[in-house]
Length: 317
Image (cartoon, rainbow, N blue to C red; front, side):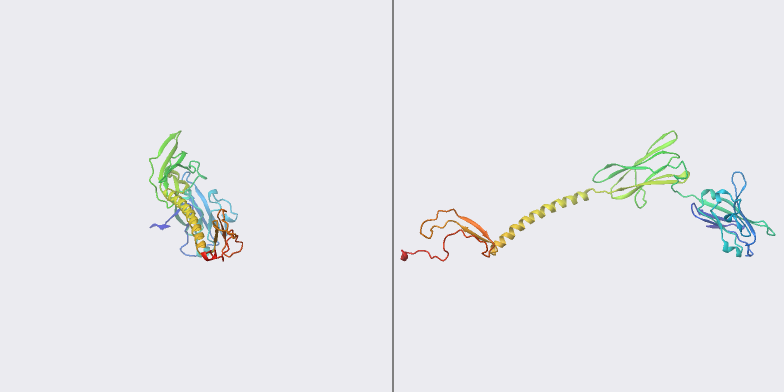
C-alpha cells in the first residue's frame, strides 16, 4: 500500500512476512543503466545510515559489490529491465518489523543531485514465534477432564509464560466458546493459566494462546468424537434387530416345514399298530412314524397290511 504526501514523499505499508516494493524513479525517464543510485536506511539508535542496496553502472550488492548491511543481504533486489526507464525501485523480501523506518534513494552524481524519501511501515501479525523469541510460550496442553452422555469438559493449560498470555477456546470454525473463569497463578514472574470449556457436539476444538506484547500466538487442537444418546439408541436398535431377526428366522423354518408337509413334499408314514395281520392274528407291535421325501425313494414302510386288501364282511365268514 502506497501513501503519497504533499511533498512527494511516499509511505509504504505492508504486513509482516510479505514483500515490500520501495518506489524510486527519475521524472525524466532516462536510462540509469550506467548511473549510480544508492538506497540507505536511517538507523534509530546510533543515527548512522545502513546500506540497503547500491547500484553503479551494473555493479551492485548482489553480484559481488561489498558494503551491504548484514540484515539486508540476500533480501533486496532491483528491477533490471526497468533501469532503461529511469526506474531505481527495489523490493525487500520477507519483511520483518525491524525493517520499518525511513529510507532514501539517492542519485549523488546527478546535477542537480536528486534524493527521494520513502517510509516503510511493516505491520505486525499474530503468529507462532517460538523459534525466534525465547519469551514466546510453547503450545498449550489440552486434556479431557470429564465426560457424560450430554457433554465433555475440556481443559487447556499454559505453563510458565511471560509475558502473561491470553487463553481462548474455539471451535473448528474459529468461533469463541464460552468458558469457565480462568485459573491463574504466578511463580517467579511466570504465569500458569488453565481454562475449561464444556462442549456438546463432535468437532475439532482449538485452544489459542496469545501474547500480544510480542505478537506471538500458538494453539493446540483436540478432536472430540461426541457420542451421547445417539450412540446409545443405535446400540439398542442393533440389539433389538439381532434378536428380532433370530425369532423371525425360527418362525420361518417352522412355516416352511408345515407348507412342505401340506403339499406332500414330505410324506409322513405312520404305523400305529394294525388290528389284524395277514393270518388274522392281532398285531401287538408299537406304532411308529417315518418321514420320507414324497417321491417314494428311500421310504421305509413299517405297516404289514396290504393296502389293496378289502375288509371282511359277514358273507366271507
